[in-house]
Length: 111
Length: 120
Length: 312
Image (cartoon, rainbow over all chains, first blue to last red; front, side, top):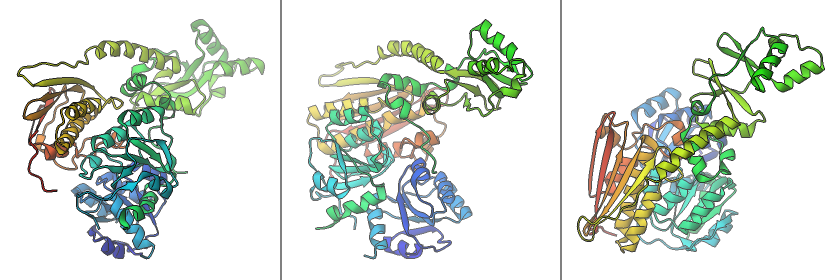
């Protein structure tokens, strides 16, 4: 499913982008950047509350199509600027990581 | 899809263990949970207003157990079958919180659990 | 192959709790040996053998000016004697691919290196890549024994006092040590136990637990250490977290959601989300924070026992 469509399904807002409206096929949910670096597959969608500039660096390294920031967390300015620079789509949602993960799964499995 | 902070239904821990191909590392006082909170950040867990939750985390430190205790979680589910040290299990025992493990990563565990919590 | 976690806990997992606290506090520079005999790359292996014999050491770093370029160990000398090249220069036979430690690294990293590699000693360099010392397992032990002695004295000052300034008032005070992750939360747990004994309302108990825990963790992560005091009165619970520095320049900033000064290492443990003080403020009925840079910070949270009117 394309990032833009996923955004709509989640009822999320796009803080930056969508830049490259890519297909999302894999997802990784984690708040720990070291965990994402170690275990997330490249080109996964990232679901997290880690609204921090470093998240962009990690997402960029793993060529992630987008990041979903949960729990209504605000995206700080330096993170947003970094996302624009690296062309990473940032979506925000009020849902928790658990609910967002479930919604994304249902969307991707064609529910 | 997000429900209000009212008494959600009880979901049996045994059903959870089956759903995620899990193992029981320590069996605590309660045999049910009412909702899932999935987070790797302690402060985030502490903001939850849900009660009697299952804390889903990929972090296996003692702090996860303490944080879970602070918010009155009934059980903790550790993702990735990460090795858990004895002091963490001992702490879970001391605090009476059920400790579970699953081989799945967090995202997969979330959706494997969803029929139990979202279904009716 | 994906990266590993920044902290390998393999080695420290099997060590006892108190020992691990101490390891967490120490850095490589606290444990390393600094007045180390070193050889020049132009020295012969025979000269190095004599150096080792006279000084009873089993490994020698080889330097080029101040920079570390290799190591010679007893094994290398034995091979040289066996194969007859003992008069060769060190630079011809020294081990070049060295695993080095940085002096600012936490000792836990060093311990995990010992676990990962079979070498018993590691050369240490500073930020300028100059050679500054050697760390071996015995040095780790020596540093820890020293710290443990200090720790035993300090543990004696971990006090719980029951004072009654007024009838029905209970006061408890706990010492919080910097980076003491093993024990961070134990004080809050005691408060939770106390409140449960006193049959405090469930929601009030939870708010007090969250406030206490967040403040306790903050002291452990962001300060040089301090105390947390709980005062249980007839109508309220007061939590006071006081630390010994470094102090906060802008207290409004730290109360903003998402503001954090935590580094990657702290974040990898699940802390440093920048929600600690905002969380505390949110659950408190009364909240105040005062600070002086270079002196310390005091955070006070008050929670009334009479639960506020909350709709279910």
